[in-house]
Amino acid sequence: SPHPTSSQTPSATKATATGLLAAIADVGSDRRRGGFSRHGYDHAELDLRAWFVEQARRRDLDVRTDRNGNIWAWWGRPGPDAVITGSHLDSVPGGGAFDGPLGVVSALAAVDELRAKGFTPRRPLALVVFAEEEGGRFGVACLGSRLLAGTIDPAKAAALRDPDGVSLGEAMTAAGLDPAGLGRDDEALSRIGCFVELHVEQGRGLIDQAAPVGVASSILAHGRWRFSFTGEGNHAGATPIADRRDPMLSAAGLVLAARRIAAEVEGARATVGRLVPNPGGTNVIASSVDLWLDARAEDDARTRTVVDRIREAATEAAEAEGCAVRITEESYGDTVVFDSTLRDDLSAALGGVPALPTGAGHDAGVLAARVPTAMLFVRNPTGVSHAPAEHAEPEDCEAGVQALTTVLEKLA
Ligand code: GLV
Ligand code: MN
Ligand code: MN
Ligand code: MN
Image (tube, rainbow, N blue to C red; front, side, top):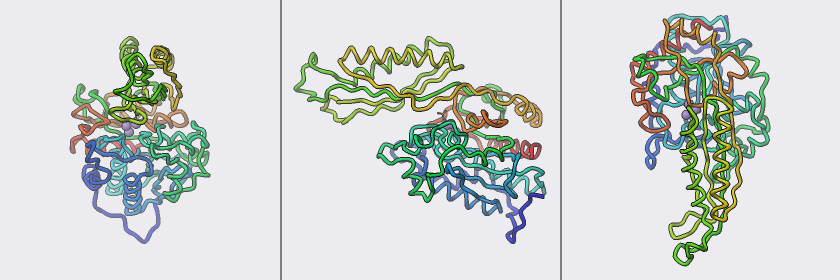
């Protein structure tokens, strides 16, 4: 049996997801923005990683960090065809308490449930914490899982820089990890038989269907593009309007065009949530403005159409102001349709639960290209996510843990 032999006796007490979340509620709470700011390899995320390692060891799990900074906690010996569950601990800037951590704490609580039932896995079983899922620090979402799966160039990834100019490689080194090993990890991939990620729902699907738990059907195609507008820095009072080349005007043109264009393509979404003027003074016409476009749609063609049209609008807006624009695609992922056999099996094991599409990206979406992957969603009574109002009631969190326990029991 893969059950560990250890001198330590695993704790007989069962943790709850809500109790575990309460234990980390002080880590990375953001007084200025509200909510939580926990980003890949920053103080808060490193504290959470250390906390997870401690929780896993308390449960007698065998903890290893892979070459890409993802943490694996094995119940028994690591092996092929393993059942993997987990999520991420980082957040967006000023994010909610649940996006990411709920999947991790639910995995810990499910281990307690399985132990209390005297369950012994027939297949290897592991919990995973993926690094920098939101891309809140280095700009590329699902960085740990993309590196693992080999869908991002490791040299480019290592050179990604945060707003303070610190590279991923430097941040990993500071965290005691060696960035030389970054990149596709066939050994780790070959162990994954299937992956199940539990996540707070980021919409109203489960509220509308009056269900505490659901399964995911698909993820929108989505990506991030950086637009750098360059004009002429000058004095806000001394420069006549006719003499200006103000990149903020071009940026504003893009923001308005993005809304108009997305509204014209069915199901499409386009967002500018981050805009950085340089140098950023009230009485200074900016010399340059960087902004980031997040665009999503049902399929690749529609997403490309939206982005191409926004590119055109941005180019026109720049020309109209005598500015230049440079456009870079920072990350992209096509539509994900989750393995329908696994999804239907899990739904049946849970007595039939709603299947929901989602507009949010996930490590599960990255792994779905390599292994059978599924997601469980837990109802969010506000329907809000990536904001402090994101929520899940304790009884729904408990329903999530029970669902994950049932699923792991069935799969492992
Ligand atoms: C990540 O949560 C994303 O969808 O942006
Ligand atoms: Mn998120
Ligand atoms: Mn998430
Ligand atoms: Mn996400």
